[in-house]
Length: 580
Image (tube, rainbow, N blue to C red; front, side):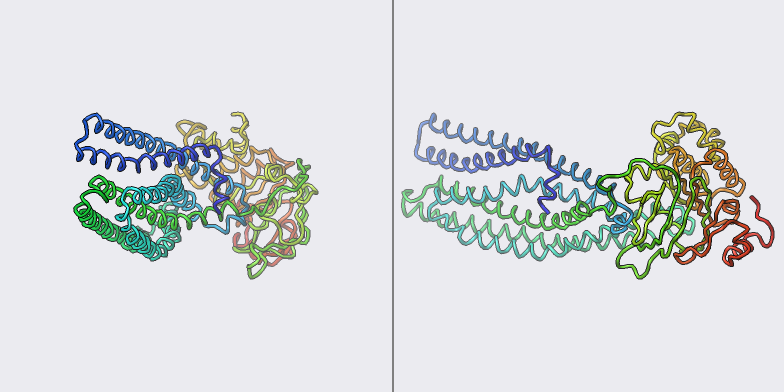
């Protein structure tokens, strides 16, 4: 896990090394300060000349200044290294997610991925800074301070034989009790973020049903759950303070009491006042180092959970990848489903699609009808290889989709979903997702075909009108038409409309279909719809039910022999002819 994460260090290895170097220098200089202090105290007590005292004081001041400089440099290098590491890690995660197929994304909830890229990476960033600073400083300080204490204090250093194990065991026990509570928090973060995401996305629904109080209560409960876990953990960790003070005061009393007796009984021969002063400082350094090590232990425990969640994303292998020698050109828009079966996961109870055999000639217009849950969307998602088939083969242009370069295939297939997304930016910027080099004339023509030009032209800034995040400043029908225009700019071999005219009126829907016939006759067009009027003029209509193709044919053929089609037709027309 550590090796996997260390790959994100890259250009910040130098700053990491310099941080470690500065920390070691800071520790060495810091443990020398009590030594020089003791010498100066002893010189003053012995009545030494002012020049000797100034010399010791100067060395002490120099050590303090250099230690401060090393500490400041270490802080600067550590901040750059940890922030850079987190930035690389965040980019690596985002790049990895971009390569995921739909089946990979299905394993992670949106809220979980957001938490992993924000809270979890922040925890790892803070831990990394702590590791390269405090986790290096504290052990070195502990070792150097104990060594200097035995050099300076002799018998007095025996206090650490009692204090260090007592504090070490106590801090370990405290950390062990705190760990489970910290571990439990992260899954609850996912739940809280999920509540926030759902509420913001569905704000209009929440207000429409006056459910603000219910949503607030749901968020409060999730937040309160996290608070309880953190409070429990922090209460346990809070015992570090009293334990630390107990050991510190025991150490101080022991050194002052035993040291004073030794000074008096040996008349300063065994130990002197300067050594007692140094021992008090070294004692504080030792105990503080142990305290920091325990805090590092707790912090790393929290971060290990975050690390695991991050590595889960980094190690998730995309289920869809390019073949060794991919086909780089899609010849035409013909589509073949040959004995296709598909299920979303190996654990699924049944196939979402089965026994699918279908041939679509290039340039045909095909309608797909079926009830909710009949797997219409699942069927068309196999064409641009958003999912891979479980059995059988899907061909585009006579070539199995697995043999294509993924980008080449998806550039040749435009899919417009019912709930497609617009991104923050101008209308032109959104439309150029379909073709970043599209001219203004091409953009306008695509909007004319999609029946979007009329309302865009009436906007104050026309095609430079700014679209808010999620397209909240345009209606559902306008958003669908802009998404159709965006798909047309790709000049695809295959255009798929997945119930993407559901929010427009029947007249506009008819104009859009007429535009397809006139402007893109060679493009294969697949229209998933709920309205018979949207598909009855298609060259072929596919009727689906329960993940299986029930029948195919044109309007007249299906009307004469397919009970499902006839039932839908009569239900929507009430025996008459639908308005197109």
